[in-house]
Length: 93
Image 1 (spheres, rainbow, N blue to C red):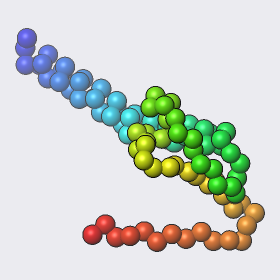
Image 2: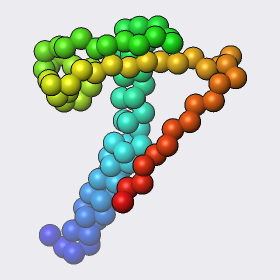
Image 3: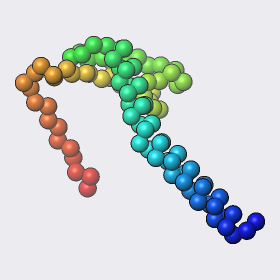
């Protein structure tokens, strides 16, 4: 195999790997998040606390849930509200 042909396939492989990487990093997290939000909306309404039921390992809503922890969520609809939501984020140090 000549050096030119080798460089062609190397460049083609790098371009394909870059496209696949960008797809996985940019596109898929949004799809997964959108699917999770849709699943949460199907479980319960807004402005209410909802505890997730323990499920079999293959059917869980969250990635790799720990069996010793209870998972819950609450969706708030603040579109018509004058309330402000604030959160303090701890430093990473």
